[in-house]
Image (cartoon, rainbow over all chains, first blue to last red; front, side):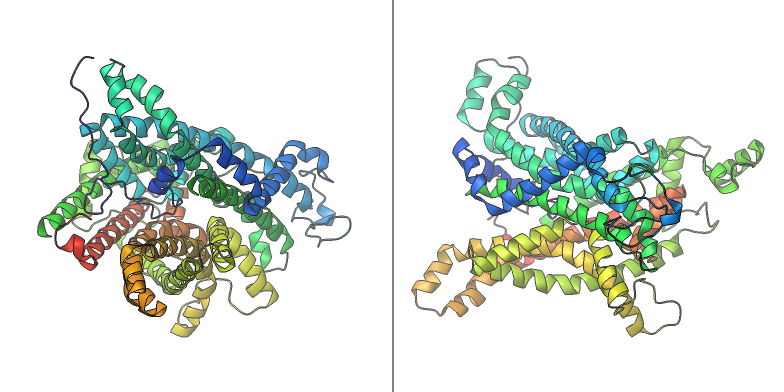
Length: 317
Length: 317
């Protein structure tokens, strides 16, 4: 092994007195993960995953998500109308037997738009969360394992970035590069990276003092091999919990961007964008144009959050 | 204690400086030419260039950053491209509006969240706990505009009980203004409730299981005394940090709520400035958010230290 060994970081540096401690500076606005997830996940066993199937919150969440996945995949086949077809003579029609959820100001069928609108959000959120988890895990591993000035510098930068609400960072980037499925995925992934990096860093700090890490270093393994070959498998459960919890916030983030007009451009059906386009009609009494997409969004995001919470609980029980 | 404060202050200055860099360069990645944005697509190129020169946006990046930073340190946030006047008064007025809304949300949610969390902890694992925990989790994962829409439909459109715009209009009384703020505050309350309750619950459960709580019970104190005098005093400390750090989230949530309810606050100001490429306005708004957040976190840390004798006397827990 060439060069000096990386200096071990302070063990258990989690007191609020230590300014470098991995306190959850999001104050949990992106979930009570962090240290809890680390501790929780260190006890994962395959048997615990089976416990999930006995949790009602998990089953309800999984059922709802499955329903929306079916809508996303077979949306155009299930939808009673073409979600883009305009019937200007039937504009703003109240819910009826022909249009269960009514029609929007362009006469498009709200039910069809709700069904097909599940697609883009269900493509963007998992991909963005995977991207954020992969980048965040790599960065967190490097911060926790290499320590030293690299860790200090990156920690300060992360702290400064997290002083800004992620909605604002995300929409600045979207304004800069323009909204599309690809750009929103990458931007949400990048916004999540520092958050996930911090949790992973905390997990690495626990692991790096274990004997197996010293042993593999003494065997002459390269830092990259120790990080990804030795430490990563041991913190994998923490990464998995982090992933499931962030997934709910990705839905939250994507929907919020859509609502602010930085999401999928029209006329593609999208819940957040449809709400944003039609909520001025609320005062005129056209509640169905916004309420149904809002309820669809609420059901998806609550379902994803329930799944994430069940997984976290099962791992920590 | 004094060294701790000095160290925290030093780090705060460092974070703020990094923040100023991020904010300034985030403004630079936005595409578009301020001169063009002000004069419109049909203005002559020479006019655009001379306006750019007048605004100073054709100078090198570093010069502009230093000029901007110098101005900010002197309390001069620059000139709005869109309004052609100093940014300061706009930001100040918006900040005051946002603070009103945020304070109302906090006044409602802090007692609710703490009571909810403590009740959940006292009935850990029983029905009351599950109801509070699952409700809190579900509510905090629903985006503010979704709950806002549902509230508008119920209270504004169906019951006609509350006004659906946040601004009461000039010259209306304080009580009327307050009535207009109730509906916009509720989505913020719903999102925050889950986090505060979760922290209060975790803290209470931890102190209920502690040695000192057991000792207090075993020496024959009534349960209410144990909870009031021994458990709650310890369990609510971490909750203070969470509440303070929620200010960061709160402002992100304000962007959405203020847009939905058309309220002239800081979130709305940044949103409009970003869309209209009014860089000076946007940078000032974002910087103010960052400063508020960093200062709130500092206050939380100091408060936590003051309230915890173990930390106050120099220990590290």
